Image (tube, rainbow, N blue to C red; front, side):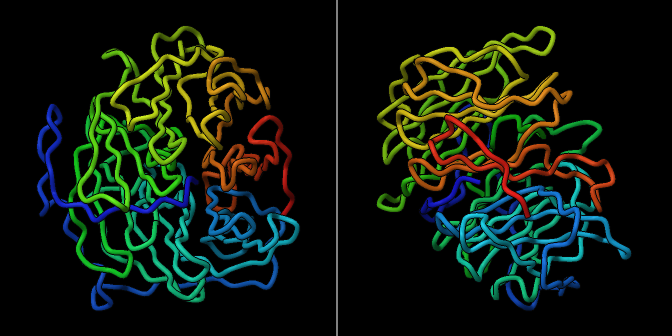
Length: 382
């Protein structure tokens, strides 16, 4: 869900240690001539039983939620919109493609809007609107599934990999960029082994900065500089793919997840105030949960979403030095999506994101908000 980044135009590069990415592999036209119109569904109110899959914010008050609800004629995908931070909701037409679990063929699992008019729905394909959802067009994408997408002023950035629910992802995906107005996708870099658990948040954006883990490095892009900054991550070689968060204009935090045992993993949070040139161990959160997604409201306010036998949200108000459980569901690991913050105090996460058309699997699909930087959370009703 992380938004408010501004990405510099990226040229094709190869990051040391992760091989090369060929620009032609990422090439794809988004010109009007290449588009095919997707059938839209429309309603004046959010359908009964609506369950959220993904959320995107264009201001602290305005959001779009991708989800699904039982319906008579599939696909049952819907989009809900709020102008008052969840106090009330209206329906927006959605592209005619079912929601599904990340990596599921023929499904979508993410939504990102750059402005109230210009947005994307992504997954096994990419749909784009420039009129607030009245019309959705399917546009060409780089080869593979769009696991994560950041829409920022002037640019769209996509993390692409050939993943499958049954077999997971290959060792590397790749990062590609495209002018927000349309055009050819350009390869940026190979990306470290990607995951299908909450892949929406693999690209972190905040404070005018975009960051993503690239093999054993973290790549940082910002609007006031051409090119990019690349520094090694502090994680161990045996660790799982880490989760990075942008904490300030030059600040980063990273969650390294190591040894695991019966629903637990050793977690370490490192922080940096110089784009990752130097890292400092901040603290070790609870080992509960397999891996996790890290997000930052501010340098001193961090949150982690993780799941295993249960689903947990961890909170630190001490820049990662100490942690406590802020929210817990004993649900067998329904999990989370789109953990992020829109201001220094306001944040959002989707609990138990819907992963089937019409929510046939009956997942919670709840939108949860925080008003205190992640210290406490409450459910929002549609």
